[in-house]
Image 1: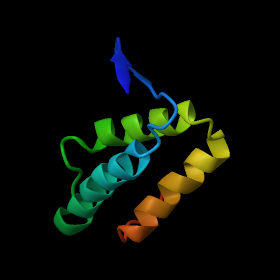
Image 2: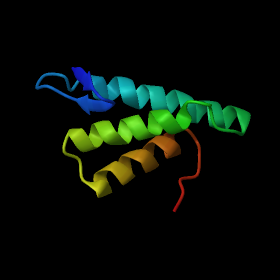
Image 3: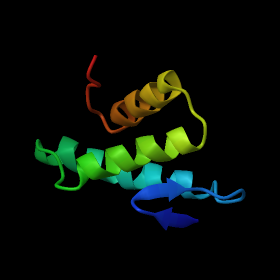
Image 4: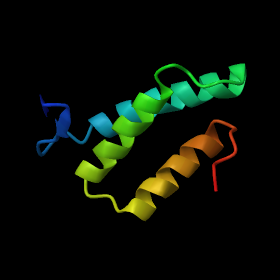
Length: 80
């Protein structure tokens, strides 16, 4: 993987980063559920995860569904 000017570049074979970024966001969402407020890095984790999914070729609908599922798994109500 190469990071260039803040943009995530994913080379073939680097798909193993998706579960790690999903887990980072899941931890931030779990923090919100337990404490009632967002983790200071939650917005950044969310933006990074969405950008990575876009780089992997996911559609906006697929990204939205992935984000809803993560919030649901954390026990949060997704924004509609």
